[in-house]
Each structure stands twice: as structure tokens, then as C-alpha cells.
Image 1 (tube, one colour):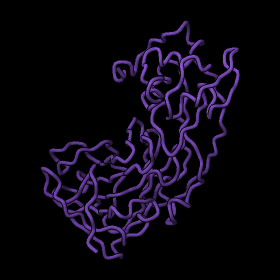
Image 2: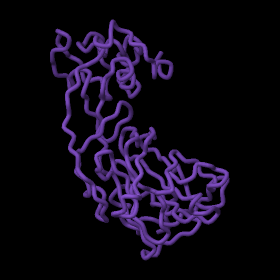
Image 3: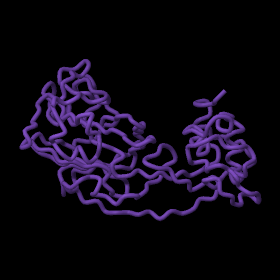
Image 4: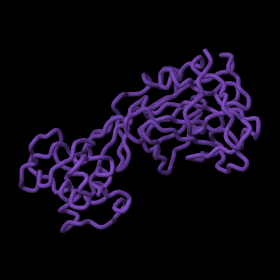
Amino acid sequence: MKLRTALLGSSILLCGSVAACAMAVEPEDDASTTGTPATTSSVNAATTGSTTSATQGAGGSVTASAGGAGGGSSSSTGGSMNNCAHDVCTLGIALTLGCGDPCVDTVCGQDSYCCDTEWDQTCIDEAVDFCSASCTVAVLPGDLVITEIMNNPSAVADTAGEWFELHNVSQNPIDLQGMSILHQANMPTAVETIAQSVVVPSGGFVVLGVNGDTTVNGNVSLDYVYSATVSLNNTTDYLAIQDATAVIIDELTYSETSGLDPSGKSRNLDPSFMTALDNDSDMHFCEATSTIVGGMDQGTPGAPNDICPP
């Protein structure tokens, strides 16, 4: 049977030593680009391909920096030829015991699913836990999309009920830890770095807000509580999420001059326009129509957005 939570987080290495499990880590150039907030398209505002490093979760693509050879190529690992179909940091077909990567043998010895059925995200996590494999992930501009903004609640005060929503449109989970929230262009005091793990599942949503107490924030469950430094203006504002190397992943500017000026309703991105390019225009947003469960204002925090009227 496929092992899952029972093994995750285990600190016991089931091989002779850490050295026997650990793979050599190839250094990777970090293409760091200083991101200056701007009102241009968020996809064009950053240098595509910049990478961040993590041990769990992944953005647009996964690059192995440890754990054998990828793509079925042969290389020398521990004195033997590596004929594994792919590396331990890559989702794919089941790997084979004895293919030449000691980490594969370690993982499959404890979780046979990885060598019998497929090498899934849990197998990657186990490679990290059991073999100290370091899996580098690339979160690309556009992988995260700002899809909903409650900048002017009416059931509660702005200081208690502001929030915004992020949607992961990539094929892999993304951890927001180390990323920063920006608003009001050129105001460095309006920057907050996310210091804890906040994983956005592939195709999923997370909600970030100023107050985590559902009894006073309009009954909105938050995945991350930011400080009052992030205060969303009612009339016009700039909002962005950037990675640890200051590359903008998504950004937008909203303004009441577009004709959209909701009160007690979120700024809701139409489900037909769930991209980091389409959300640059207020014309793709509308007032939310769904009432927040247990609350009085309208919005869909953490859930699919309302369809905008034609």
C-alpha cells in the first residue's frame, strides 16, 4: 500500500549514513532581477526563468539539484551507472530499484508505490526527508494570479476586514514563504515579506488579510495575516506579489475611475480571465455577488470567483 503521512517528516534515514543517501548538489546561478513596481503587464515586468529554492512545493517547473540523472541519461553515481528514468526531484513514471541512484532505493524501500506505480509529489518529499535531496523550483511570472480584492468592506472596518486572494495557475504547489506583498508603487514601507510557509495548491486559492479573527473580520478564513503596513486604498492602488529575488510574479493597479468602485463587495476577477495578463485591466473585474458564508459582505474568499455579467 502507498505510504503517505506516516513517513513524511521522518528524521530517520534508513541507509547506512547521511552521506550514503545524500546526492551531490550542483550550484545554480540565481538570476536575480530587481523588481520595481510598475503598471505594465505583470508577465512582462519580470525576467522570465528566475528561480527560487525550496524543499517542498513547486511552481512552474522543477529542476533537480540533487538525486541522480534526469531524462534517462546515464551518469556515474556511487561508482555505478545511473540509468534512472528521471531524477528524484521530478514528477513522472515509477523509478526502478537498483537503477543507480541510492536515493531511489531508499525511498522505494519504504514506499513501494514510488517504484510500482508512479513517482509523485510524496515520493519527491520523501527524497527530501530521507536523502536530504535539494529540489530547486522555478516560480515563474504569471504562476500566481491576484483574483479578488476586498479593499472596502462595509460590514466591518477596513482595518479589520481587508483581504485579497491569490490563485495558483501552475501545475504544481507553490509556497509563498520568502515572497513579498507590495502595494502603492515606490513606497518601500508598504512591503511585507511572508515569513511562514503558505502553500498554494495547484489550481487552488489562498486568502491573505489584515485580521485573522473571523468573529470581527467579516467571517473570512485567512491563510496568512499580514501587518497593517499593507493597507488597501479604496480609490486606487497598486498590488503585487514578488519572489525572494524581487521578481514580480503578478501585479495590478485598480482605480475607481474605471467605473468599478464596490463597497461591501470584493473586486472579483471573472473566471474567464484568470491570468496575470488579464487581471491588469479593471474591465475584467466586477462586484462579487455571492454573500460570504456567515458574513454580510459579498465575496468568494478561497473559492472560485463569481461569473461577471456580460
